[in-house]
Image 1 (tube, rainbow, N blue to C red):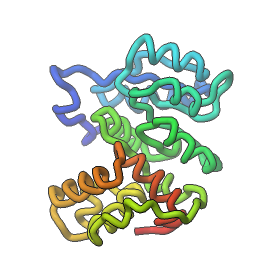
Image 2: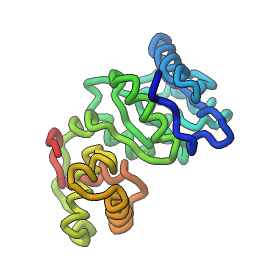
Image 3: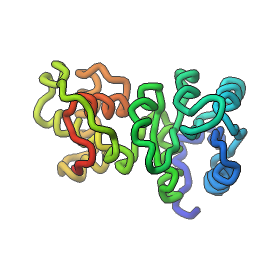
Image 4: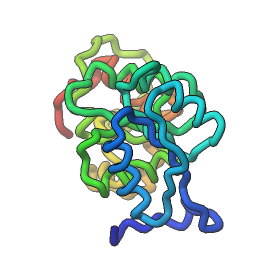
Length: 224
């Protein structure tokens, strides 16, 4: 995959990213393995066909990222993620599983991506999660279920620009995309995002998405 070499900071000492793929479909696991290992800087160290096996392998091997399907036998991906606190889990889903999104994020997932995304987007998602950031593709956030309309009091502490940034990051936009949309520098956006997370007491962007949709601050299906 030309043009998809990993940044040096993700590979200290040239070490490859170690991945665990959990999916009950052998062909799906094989496809993910082929795409990710073709980058040259990632290796799939194990595969799991059910949630129980995924949890056991993750605890024993400590991969950099676990790619976790939602629907699996014995233990589903959400329950499995809940048993891996602190692990970097990238949830994989297919169209029609909208009801699981918020539940998966509450379980501690670091990212959420559709299985049918272009290969470049899948590779990018793995790298983002491996770097310790959180990721949700806009294709996922646009399909979040309808939510309550109770707005947390902490939202009133945000400035007008911080609220604007909050809405955009909650729709899955990256800092660079927000900067381009608001015509400001990347460093400015990074500062705004940090302030938003601190004021709202949020750990990361994933928690911001959950709050934004559950509070009714933004509506599912809307575009920035």
